Structures are given as structure tokens and as C-alpha cells.
Length: 113
Ligand code: SF4
Ligand code: SF4
Image 1 (cartoon, rainbow, N blue to C red):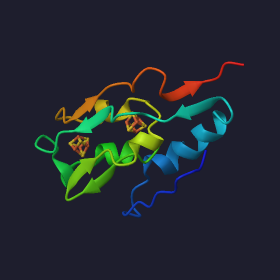
Image 2: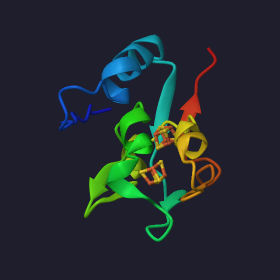
Image 3: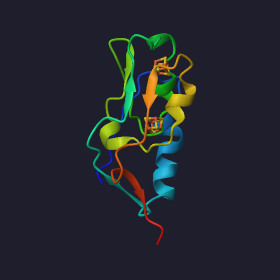
Image 4: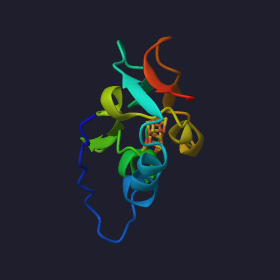
């Protein structure tokens, strides 16, 4: 699976992909595969999102699935990258993130052998 590199803008912040992304990928190497998702299973309600004053989902997401677009969070890369950890929905204090698992048989599939 091709690794996607993400640029984060504020050098004073350690973003999720920098903190745990590489370590998690290393630990899980060869133990999972990503089956392409067929529809967006996570959505941000821009009317609820308080955007640049928060940015928590964007900062914490270990796979860099979020981008800040026009001052609001957007699940921009998640169709290819989201690891279904669930962290983003818990850090959103205003309930702007509508979270669900991807369609059965798609997304992260762990290999047990
Ligand atoms: S559930 Fe997906 S989008 Fe949300 S924090 Fe985890 S990896 Fe990122
Ligand atoms: S955590 Fe919620 S309020 Fe904060 S940027 Fe993300 S969607 Fe917006």
C-alpha cells in the first residue's frame, strides 16, 4: 500500500501522524490490509464545526485523514487512509463529526495469521 505523506502547518504542534502514525504502521506491518471504501463513513457538519479555534480532529488523527479547508475540518483523505480508530469523534466537543464504520467488507481488515 502506498504511503501518503502529510504536511502540517504549525511547527509548534506535534500532529497525530507524527506521534503515532509511523509507530502504528510499523507495529501493524503485514497484519492488515485496506479494502477500498465505497462511501464516506465519516462526515463533518460544517455548521457545527468551530474550525480554526479547535482543529482537534485535524491535529489528533493518526492517519492525517483530515484537512482544514476554508476554516473548517474536512475528512479529506479518509476514504484511503482512515484506520477507524474513532479518536476524532471523541475529541470533537461540539458533536460535528458523524462517525460510523465503513461498509462491511471494506476498510481495515486485520489478518490474524
Ligand atoms: S477514526 Fe479515522 S479519521 Fe478519525 S481519528 Fe481515527 S483514523 Fe483519523
Ligand atoms: S474536532 Fe470538531 S469542532 Fe474541532 S475542528 Fe474537528 S470537527 Fe471541527
